[in-house]
Length: 203
Image 1 (spheres, rainbow, N blue to C red):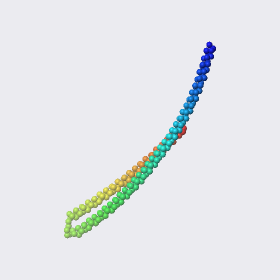
Image 2 (cartoon, one colour):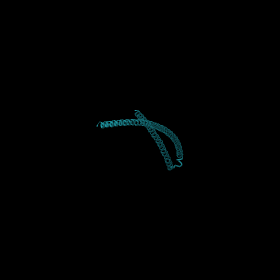
Image 3 (cartoon, one colour):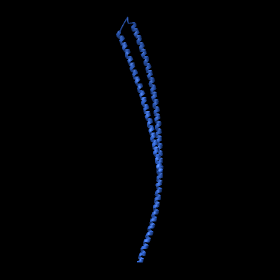
Image 4 (cartoon, rainbow, N blue to C red):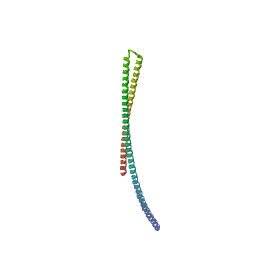
């Protein structure tokens, strides 16, 4: 009976020793796995941070370059539009002044010719009076003067339309400046978000 109990105690002691050895081995293996997992996680986090920073820096550089290119292109287009508009206005003014001067000269010549013809008609009125011819001449001169008036109205309308187009061009330029300002604000907000993300990652 005592021998049987001694054998049972020996088996229990052996089982305890084996269990403790297994637990120690399992602890050692678990600690090694945990250390390896931590090292791998830290390496992955460091690689992810480096990649994210590189991507963020690349995106910021690209965005700033695009905005700078857009500003340069916009300013160049605005300068070109202003130069073209000013040249067109100067050309139209010169052409209008030349046309007005030509019309004024033609009108004065026609009036002088009409006065000469009237004087000649009045001088020869006692000899040969043709009222119908005189009436036709007056109507012809009146039609010429009305035609000149219509031409002046057309030229005035052209100048007014060009001034209105210049006003619309200025409005478009202001809208372009507002768009560029909004892009700059968006870039500032994007930089703030990137900075906050980096601070959160460091924490």
